[in-house]
Image (cartoon, rainbow, N blue to C red; front, top):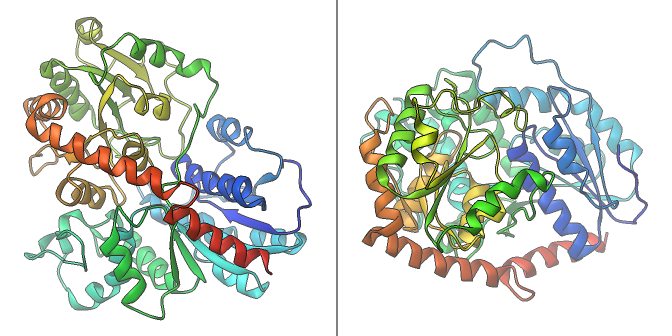
Length: 470
């Protein structure tokens, strides 16, 4: 445990396991400390010992933010190939005794903040007289869908992917069932029951922080705030993103040095986030498609997996093999070496996206990565893999029009020729030019809302003032 602090008002923050969950809540904690001077205690439920990526990331925190890894929850008895939503729910529900005892040992706690999987902690907070909040790490569109979903559950009998008509939420693009979040794609799966359990509890916290901003989703936020007076208060506080390399600086230097030698706006950054993986067949199609496009690219290459989130719980542990690119087509690395850089497992994404040479981002559409792309004005190729990423892709492509989306066969495979076409269009075609212009506008709005007098800054200040009065 990091050094404990004695500042009067204290906020307890509880993220889910996995770097994709840890990073956004830690960045929110840093914002609460640096701008509003709260002391923060981060409690870390887990199903395994801390990874090197977690410990090195947390080691950079200021002393006023303490953290504790709770005893790991044994998930080895769960069936193989179980949905990661079920694993996360199990870890949280079995960590309740540790959370309860830790809260009892702390003083001057004015609020508990958890993510979308930690809803069981709302009850613990109520028991101890602490106000509870959710930090929603995705879009207002997604949160609105969650609040509307229970009615769909009660009125639709078929699998949602078989619905002929899309769901149209207030102020949002139409959403077909095939693009609903992963946990609802099989009504007979345990993940579906977990999802229903979680979203029914979204009405319990005092407020919900949303890592998005009013100018990005004005109609969705308006619906969230006006549809139902019994909902928690909705607080748009984004974009809250990570800054800095996030690992030892030396690990990112090769990427940045290579980018320094490229022409402005000429490089496509290819990365599927902290945990996303592709099948062997899809990786080979992607490799050939990138080669055929003729464009320069920086590709974060991760070993193939049959699971779309194959490295979700083990981030930062890969890329140390003798030949980390051995699964790529024969001779591929040599063929593309004059216009491409391949790096195993990880790259300093913030520095890459903010670099003048980066002109596009082929992304899994995780919301952390998407916000980073918006902040730095980099248009996208939307390649969703899991969770709510298909919803994000629909919004980015059809609503905000800042992303191109390749067409896949019914099997889900995107072929090399289609990849090459979309890459060339993003980097130099008319649709890519329009996406680039639009995301530059959103980048300016993102900067404005997080400025001293911006909407997101004022919203968080109002909540902080409320906490300070307790």
